Length: 298
Image (cartoon, rainbow, N blue to C red):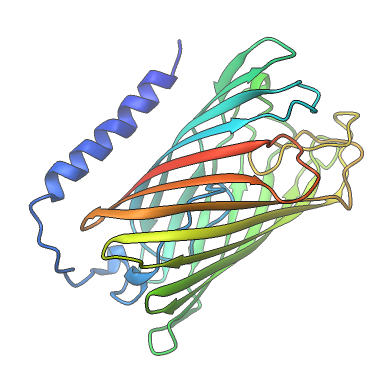
């Protein structure tokens, strides 16, 4: 069964339902409840690119429907082609500082030029995050957390490898009025270091409220491999979505840049878009990437 239409239809249903149910609200933001975060943190704008890796420090309850279109480099072993990801992230604020997060799931459509096309489910990743610093006067939010990624996905799309992965992270946000900053750092530790490589990744986000409800943004995403796997004799890796367990990647880094925007359609409903490309000579499996999301605060 092809699951892409099911996931795409679910995402569309969520977007339409949210837009219709909230369109009658006024432009004046209501006071936030504990389930959606404090009023001052609502001024921070969630990142868009690298959505499975770049976790926001904001504590809220939300759904985020994602579509990713990624072109594969013609110089790679796949000789070009593309992949698409259809996913739905979920976050639930247990308290105003603690949240459960489900950061990775969905369906991958892999279409390389050199081999047969394949489709399958992505690994599932979930965990918790806790805001240790929530300072409205300084406009500072610091939120560490961790995620466990299962091996539940399909090997046909390079998921389901090893014994899973543990990912501790820390994310920071700063509210500067019209100008806002978010950054995060994480370490990816595979439970089977033969099947998957280990790495740390780092992300920066800067947005500016150019007009009411419109936020142009710039983001930087990087990943540095700290040890090799032994699953694939190769000198390239899969980036934030795929871990190939390559044998010759330790010490290498991939850094990408992304430009785009968020638009506040109505209270509690945001659309996001970025175009992303490598800033380093190293590309791994990304020639370019479009990311679209529909973020609903509940």
